[in-house]
Image (cartoon, rainbow, N blue to C red; front, top):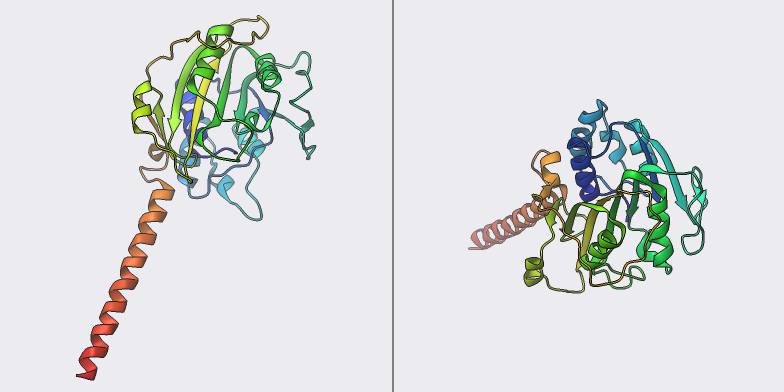
Length: 276
């Protein structure tokens, strides 16, 4: 799914509260693109932590920028595993391959990758093995709707089970009403009362976990639930000066249509007056 404003918002929180170091190494599962057109100010706000300007990475011509440019701009070492052996990507099949020996990272991201992989056990084993003890795993995955997007959607209890089986420290789990939304709502069971599925539903979960031990990965059993610390909502509109690009575009379009209707009524009134 790429790096959108929701992922940017969560990463911003992790850097600002000191969970992630200012310098480190990141491994992406699947080479991501930056879907941040309209969020130039958000990028620059994020970049203030590192003393860099990032707004130029929001451009989409001829294609969106790769996430590699984003991480390297803030001084992080970048690596990526992907079945598509593009430039700067290490060929890797998450269905079968084991994590490269001796390779551990401060941050490992799964932003819309594992739902496309049949072998889920290997995906999460690899992600565990690639994360150093003390390092952070960030997931951004589909949860509700997204019919025919991938093989799988994910439920909150999936991540609770990961926490319980592997002694991960839960750093936050958020529901994102649409994957292009700037707002991340801390997950709670009460949210279930407000959810509905339509043909256009595209809700996701964003989850941050810290690996705490050098122990090997344990495949979870459903039914053991870890506790996620209560955290406030994260709102990417704060990064963008209080304006969500998509909300602004919708408001501008609504205003344009209203102006067109008003002009049409005025023109009709003028024709009637002239004809009288």
